[in-house]
Amino acid sequence: MPRAGLDPASVVAAAAALADEVGVGSLTMGLLAERLGVRTPSLYKHVGGLDDLNRRIAELALDEAAEAVGLAVRGYAGRDALAAAARSFRAFVVEHPGRYAATLGQEPSGPDDPLAVAGSRLLDAFMAVLRGYDIPESDVDHALRTLRSLFHGFATLQAGGGFRWSADIDESLEWLIAFADRGLRSA
Amino acid sequence: MPRAGLDPASVVAAAAALADEVGVGSLTMGLLAERLGVRTPSLYKHVGGLDDLNRRIAELALDEAAEAVGLAVRGYAGRDALAAAARSFRAFVVEHPGRYAATLGQEPSGPDDPLAVAGSRLLDAFMAVLRGYDIPESDVDHALRTLRSLFHGFATLQAGGGFRWSADIDESLEWLIAFADRGLRSA
DNA sequence: AGCTAAAAGCTAATGTCATTAGCCAGGGTT
DNA sequence: AACCCTGGCTAATGACATTAGCTTTTAGCT
Image 1: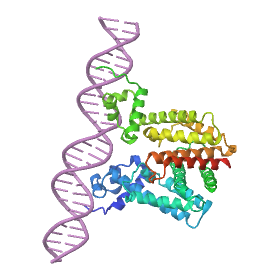
Image 2: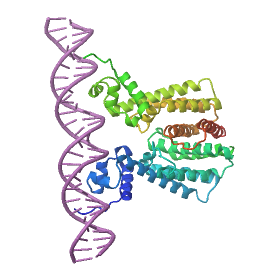
Image 3: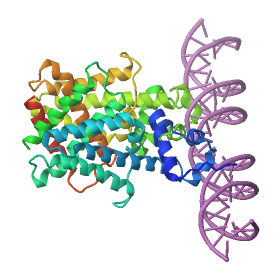
Image 4: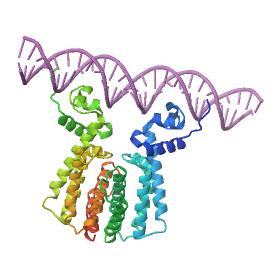
């Protein structure tokens, strides 16, 4: 019985990839085990169970999203940064719908929960966009929530097939960027 | 064996109420049957199964949301209509988180799917808001998608506990309304 | 090189659900 | 009064997640 050479990180990575393929709702321990060439109970040596697995996928997704948005924004400011953030965030969600869906409905247990840390990193990337606009200190939290809502809503609606008509989705994103720029500019 | 007097509508209504209480992910046929004073298999005389039940809850939620937003917007225009729509939509999602969550990830099978019809009704209510702004005909679809993304994102992030800091959520919503007003105004 | 103990797989067993099959009573219709 | 459709029930099946307990590999030590 040769070892499969698994560890928590590789199991989570495979699970995230599988979630992107089949949807997080259809991600099953049996399917993941099969993908890894292992029997189902063996997975419990690396992750605590399905809930734990979902949590770790969510953490991975937030980390990757923060990384992608942070890199995209680097070197830009104002509207350019806004556009870079919107495009890179949407690209991430569209390419990794399962991963991102795993983040929905996850409640971090505390401020030092790795999930909360990863979430903060993503928010920091959005915060960098806001710094290019003249937003009063007291409004920054509201602006951050608004921006996050807008990006999150667009990305999840698209990933979930929520846009039904024919209008081009890339054009809609560009319109959204211009809309957000106007909204942030005269704050 | 006395009859329980169930029919599809009452089963769906009870399921929606239960979903609001325990979350759509924890809505189980057994739990619903217990709530209705009936054994699990009896439910299959009224709904096709768990998937069908979810679909019908989603349809109910979209209908109710469209009704709520439509009523709230009536008689207002411009920024007032925008504020009324945002507040009523958020109130609906906060009061009925389970129902609304059931709408996520539902893919209508065709344009005459009752789910698509209910979804269109909600979009019509949002469309009424846009009529108060000077939006070029060619941009209306983009504006509608943007507005829907913004409302959807805010409501779902709040319902999912996605806002972690102390800043007041009502204030954030008011900020969001002003932001959207600016963004729509000079379109 | 050999010893040992933790780690990583495996099989078997259990429990929760969803779903289906097939039986039975009740009440309206003829 | 015989009928039959409807809605409820019990029993059985099957998919999964999870746990228990056994066995082999392998890393680290002497």
